[in-house]
Image 1 (cartoon, rainbow, N blue to C red):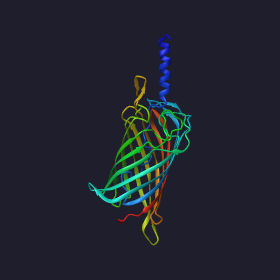
Image 2 (image 1 turned 90 degrees about the vertical axis):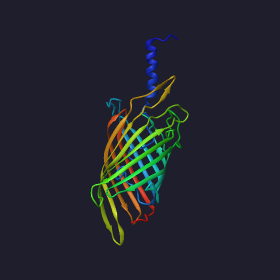
Image 3 (image 1 turned 135 degrees about the vertical axis):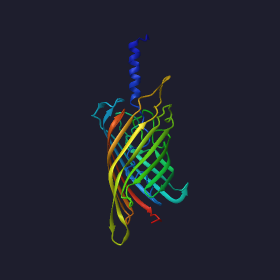
Image 4 (image 1 turned 45 degrees about the vertical axis):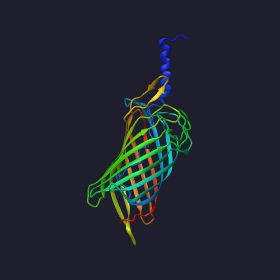
Amino acid sequence: MKWNHRKIAILGAAVFSSISSYSQLKGDHLLGDFGLSAGTQAPPSIIAALPVYWYDASKLKNSQGNLITDDLNIDAFLIGAGVSVVTNFKVLGGTYGASVLFAFMSNRLEGNKVQSSTSLGFSDMYVQPLQLGWSAERADFTVGYGIYMPTGKYEFGGDENTGMGMWTNELSAGTTIYFDKIKTINFSSIFFFETHSKKKGTEVKTGNIISLSGGLAKTFYKKINDFPVPIIFNAGPIYYMQFKVSNDKIPVGNTVFTGSKDKIYALGLEFNALHPKLKTSLGLRWLNEFGTVNRFEGNTFLITAGYIIESPEKK
């Protein structure tokens, strides 16, 4: 076959089209999982949690932030079961804790792929073997290390993936700053940095990602008759943002495709209630995305129900 410039251009366009669906590969960290009091560790306790996550997107924007289409119907859904433990054990003056999350997910978004119809299935498992928390008079601090394990179904380019097909290491650091002595008003923020292995059975590698979440909280109390601890409410505006800080690596023949780095911002609201007598909690979170570059843009919803298996020993 004789190769002229036109045929080469057509081939290049076809190759680019086939991989553009997977350019700007997503990380494992689900945005919106932290909000109010993000830099505060729970008191010593054992808590079971049931998170329900839903992401809905109608827009796709390019590397200049311009709208490609606003007529999409992208949905991702997750339901999980997790346990977090905070002990009385101290490491470097900080209180030691750990957590684990098992998740089931449908339509796991790997990249900017428009068509996705995965049914609900077991997804990647998250384990945080190390979390340390410190408290000062007007501030709290946390640091942590977590691992996402590729336990979900994965095939590169597959339409039935429930996982990301890669190991992810994640470092985190957060703080909550209080504006009054009785700690009823605070601002918090938590930082995540994730790095990734090559995807299962491929040379494809997702770039490093930075994520930040937090919010401005106001806390309210309601007394319970014949019980020493009141019902605790908090509410306020929340945010998240995420930035790709190194290029994805997607080998195609003898070349490696790297796209423009993506970024996204979101603002929303959160409400939480803790009933200590019933040992239960409920959290509601909603965020609307904007300022998107090279990715989908939509809304994030999260409902989290919690149960205190073991109450704190400290007052």
